Image 1 (cartoon, rainbow, N blue to C red):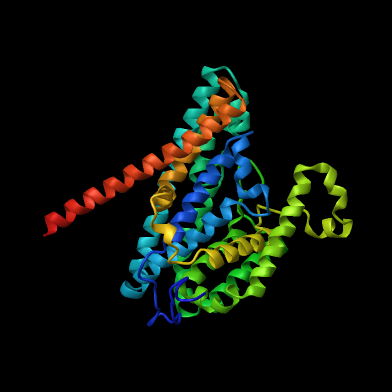
Image 2: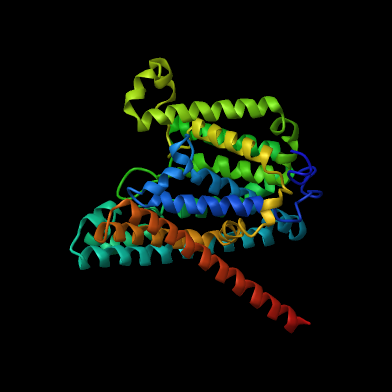
Length: 390
């Protein structure tokens, strides 16, 4: 990537790492868009969700969210590790992991209460079945303990536990990235391969493993951090090559044609049997290689046409998505609540297309409003703190 696209980060030695000093608005923009897409995907039988990328390729908004989370984690804490050392920066990272954990537990309790109240109040047990909380209603004491250990996760709450684990284990990863980024990425790839080879995953309750296998999804997180700490600069020539762009576009078209057969069963026979045997199943739990490659293709095309100094990044039209991306934890939690509320309205009021559009648009508008209030409060309290210190 050129200096106009991403900052030149220099070497990855711990004593002389060139950590980026200014925030790339593209990260906030695409994380905000990813949060909107996740919200739309979480609403069952939602026609508006057809605009999300999961319907036109192998990957979805989750890959975007995890990659950007790794990039921003390295952006924030890489500088802290350089300036204050391993112990202090690790404490800051673990503090952030604790904050995400507390948010997860708070979200879990309120989410369970929301679903249980609606299921009983409207005498519709299907809500509990759809959201996977029947176990909670039958044995709340055991389920609460399992939730505290991140083993029990209702529908739509799988991302935060993954994020918690990735952040909690990030200090040694960041230390190695700053010393030898190539080695750190190679070890991440090795762990990914071993997880596939031996079926490694963390246990879930009441059985099975995590929906997002941390041993596999860590690759995307570490790759994002590696890009933030010099990897993006190393890929400059490759990413901006017309040949790479052509390959990326061709792969996106291939993925689109394959996913088209999922929506139009009549097209399925046109997929050669040998090809179907090689690509299926496209495993989301273990971050299938085809999903990872699809994300890389999307990122390549995006970086080619959306440079760092892209003028619309400062326009008011993109400001709402950027604001949501800057408050990703709060907006993600809010999106989980809103998705179930939208589902409830569709079931109890009207399942029609106008209602689907209405709850989709209203939910995103609420997310934007909350992000704006959070930004306003942060700026207001920040100015007061500066005034007092002066």
